[in-house]
Length: 224
Image 1: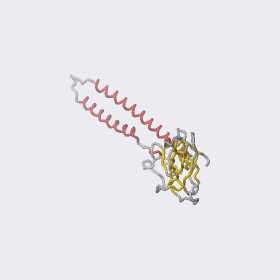
Image 2: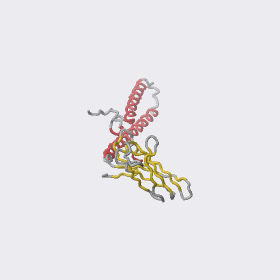
Image 3: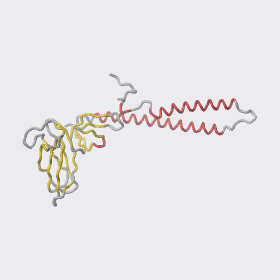
Image 4: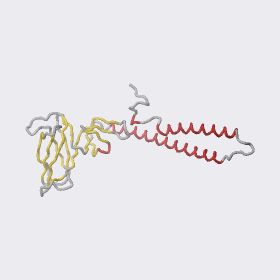
């Protein structure tokens, strides 16, 4: 089925008329009214006391300036639409590849989830907890300590060794320093990009159970 120009699903949320187009149409109506008024006044003026044309001249100059500004706005809108259309082609290449985003929740089907975590403070003790959608811990293990970014590849099995049910799982981390104080950790999940929504100004990517903007993608992993 073809999608018409005025469809809700026009590429990148473009508006074929555009605000500048509407402004131009309104300006044309106002200019017609102005010319009609000017003609009427010229026809009915007193020949012995002709009206001052300076005011009309100023209005004509003002109309010309507004018209030029609207034309510039129309050109900018066209460039913006072309840029968004070009970006659609670029983001389409993201589909099927993996991306790293700063979110703690991933989607497990049969092969688990990959997370990365780290802290800007040295850690002396790290416990990794994989929590299901009901808030229950299905898997737990100790994590790598120290500074730097660490990788945790959960294979999808529970602590008892059975395969966890498909669904969304969240990584929760309990990290302590050498004095037993709690340390905040940053968590990112690595998931496949399965959809891209280009109806808005910025593309929105579906990455596992998360919907994020293009600027939220920390890293793209091609060919996985």
